[in-house]
Length: 229
Image (cartoon, rainbow, N blue to C red; front, side, top):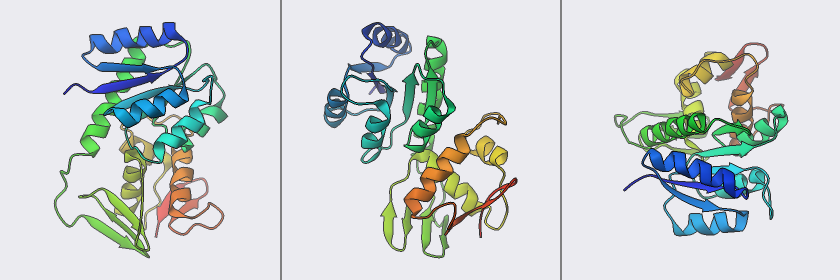
């Protein structure tokens, strides 16, 4: 079965353009123009990845991303005309996996879609040997099942969030820099202006029931990085 991409954008010309490029790469494409239609479409179809516009007539992409993340783990790419860093951080904090601004090169968008699908597919194949898990003060994480729980209650993590937490657990007691964490999890060159790691750590802490001021598991070593002790 071909991977199915959902495009949510009320600008028909943009949605049609992206559809052409994705179809040329062999993907199946579904298109929606509103948040309501998007949620209904996701409930009725097997979605491999969603491309969400931030500005929608009945909602916004951030709220829609949050709603999707309540039940689904497939990759989400935010698409918007906004260029502020705060918007990018907001999207990533709410569970988006990537962010691209308009106007954009369709070939770049297709490349990012391929990257996210490749990672998602790899992360969801049980390839780790049995027994690869950690128990740290009530935090239990298993690489084989890709599940995580805190004090017996399972928490839902995106593939990216899981891999961040696993990497920190794997390097327990060591301070991991943002650069090391980004290059290990994202597999790309880290830029000094990149706030992606910070946004994902913030979201991860929220799910673990902690804050930066009162860290329970993930501790910040200012100017150096993050650690789990």
